[in-house]
Amino acid sequence: MTSPSDSSSAAGVLVLAATPIGRVADAPPRLAEELAGADVVAAEDTRRLRRLTGDLGVTLGGRVVSYFEGNEQQRTPVLLEALLAGERVLLVTDAGMPSVSDPGYRLVTAAVAAGVLVTAVPGPSAVLTALAVSGLPVDRFCFEGFLPRKAGERARRLATLVDEQRTMVFFEAPHRTAATLAAMAETWGDDRAAAVCRELTKTHEEVRRGGLAELAAWAAEGVRGEVTLVVGGADPAPSISTDEGSLRAAVATRQDRGMTTKAAIAEVALLSGVPKRDVYDLVHKA
Image (cartoon, rainbow, N blue to C red; front, side, top):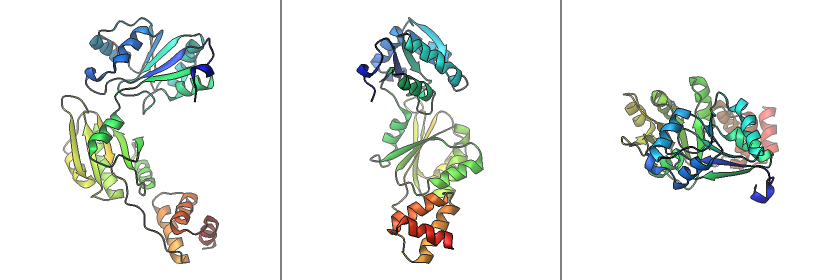
């Protein structure tokens, strides 16, 4: 872990600041302080930044630069140079925490590698908010971000998650929500519990809960606004019989779902208690 003592005394500080996902009143108090005091504010959308500072009554003291997916790779060295020159760089995205399906990861890794202190202003997160209100288990979860847009790639990704037992959180565009829910129902079952969280913390907030097929039918009528999907995990996988035929069949089933042979063998070995090398030999002998 990087600490102030690990960083160069001449280096600046990179601050990742969470911004409201809906109501501006949800902004953390420190956000206004950091916006006013930063030497550089790197913003995913400079127009949204101006609206945010206006709503907060903040006057920016430093210079503003755009930092979004299209220029992230080229702009990162420029911001790193500012950090190494001792400047305080504040990174904000359109909503929520930078780096979480938003720009920021490249800059963080570059700053860490250069020994620059990286800190954060904690605050709103669509991932945690949706998870909390979904009504689904929250003791173990994973964030999968956006699924691939193309149907074939999306189906393959969903197949790799068929045995995932943790609650899963996804981001999705409103116009793709119905198709995504239908694909999930086809792969994971019509009755898999899920929640569609729309416009979180905003005036028209809506959380729709039900089975995947039911939610897909509802979404087919049209969905608007920012969407976060929360889907319950799979039931624990039953143990696998240790006879040769069952072991081969279990590996083949997982391959059909999109798992690599190596991953399928490893999982079957784990569930059956048979050494991985023995399962490998059975599969390749067949």
